[in-house]
Amino acid sequence: MLRPAGFASSPSQKEAPPQEEPSRPREMQTATTLSRIIAVLVSTALTLVAHPARSNQQSELIQNYCSPAKEEPSSYIDIKDYRIESLHVVLRHGDRSPHTVFLGVNTTETAYICSSEYRDLWDPDSSIMLNVSVGVSDEERSRALLFGRSTHFWYGSCERGQLTVLGATQLHRVGKAYRARYGSRMSVSIADMEVRSTDLWRTQQSTQAFLHGFLGNDFAGTRNNAIKLNVVPEDVDTFNPSFATDRGLIALLKQAQAHETYLAYLNLSRRLIEKFERILQYRLPDIHGDSVQTFFTELAVRKCHNYSLPCALSPSGFEECITEHDLAQASRNLGWESMFLYTGWEGRVDVVRHAIGGLLAYFVTRMKARIAHSERGMRFHEDSFADIGGTRHGQMFMTGADESLTSPRMFVMVGRDMTVAALLAALGSNEMDQWPGYGSEVALELWKKVRDVDGPTPRWVVRALVNGRPLVSRDPSSCDLKTVCEAGTFFGLMKEYIELK
Image 1 (spheres, rainbow, N blue to C red):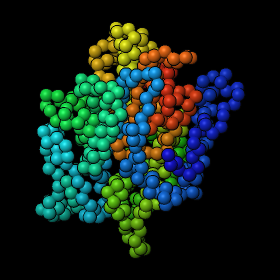
Image 2 (image 1 turned 60 degrees about the horizontal axis):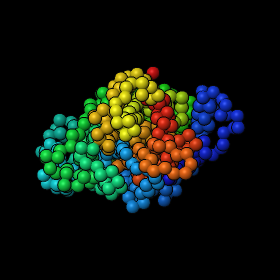
Image 3 (image 1 turned 120 degrees about the vertical axis):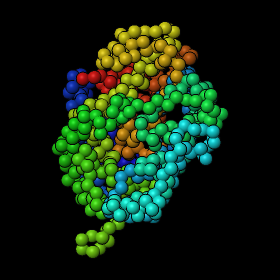
Image 4 (image 1 turned 30 degrees about the horizontal axis):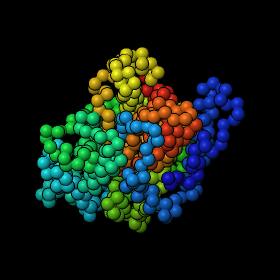
């Protein structure tokens, strides 16, 4: 994985903890670890500017966002002496059209191509989505000019932020990879699946594309075998972060951006942000602070479709352009911001809890229900959830082994980039410096031992894959999800993100 210059592979891996540290109270250990992380982040912020990415790194950074590298299904390895029992998959939607219009950019040369249903790509009988016509006619454009509206809008067939044909193809390809990887191992049918999406159109259509790839036309196109797509409004969706409606998360973001470490980073990145603002004639809304996220994601869309980056005349009359180097630098900066927000300051646990606490609680509950159902074949009560913390989640799923939880062996949710980033943070990923690209995926596998082997081995284990590759942990000594992590240990590590304060 390509890292911004100056990133150590991991604070915990780079230097071994002092000999006496295991006997320290947990609070002191946490403070020591955090101070090391902050030291690395401060050093990294300095090197972001002092050591810009080389030209080959620039292309790789952008390409990895537009189309992340995936592991081939043929390289998938089973866990010896174990059988996979359940699978939880979280994906980011595919490539989309821009959803922020910059007044300083002439977009008449762009033509993002979308479809209302993508029925032309796969099964013509599929009718999940409404038929919507999107486009700006010359008449509409003239009328907009007459009433003083900006006409800086792309030609083509996309609504703002809509899934493009390229994005649909990405998720279709991911679905086919999952069919090759898990189809015969799990023998998943429609009855074994639970599917969820955000309330955004692009995530719903991405879900449709994934299902077409995973199930094929034998299932996806027949009305008698329709799959229920669960969609929850953003205001009450605890499976996905919302920096628009979650007041607690908004407050945490402001606290993080007021942290002295983040302010030191801003002093270095401010020149790049000012260049973006000057050329694009766009000021970031207060809710985003001084993050480069909006600029990077909206500009990267153009590069994903091979469109040129914007230029504008400077006050002195010279043309000033956003370069590929600027975009690569923004990618590195965004990776730093993500690492800091989710792993590098005192409020990092609260950020993850607000962002995806409900999702993690659901994962743990479903896994426990699967284990209980397999081992005892009976329901169990709220006390069984005491170790995942918080009475609210315990009450919500107190009959955890009932049919509603044990029947679906595969859970699929398509969310946004922030959903995947928060999940990677909770799982202890050592690759937080790379912002999740289009079609990024995280798979949590629950395995059961099916035959006795020499030596002590856990009966139930959890493994995590990122884009088809084993997850690389920041601290593999606690729970190495790259190989296997004992299920009880995994539940304990998730506890702090699930507990309700």
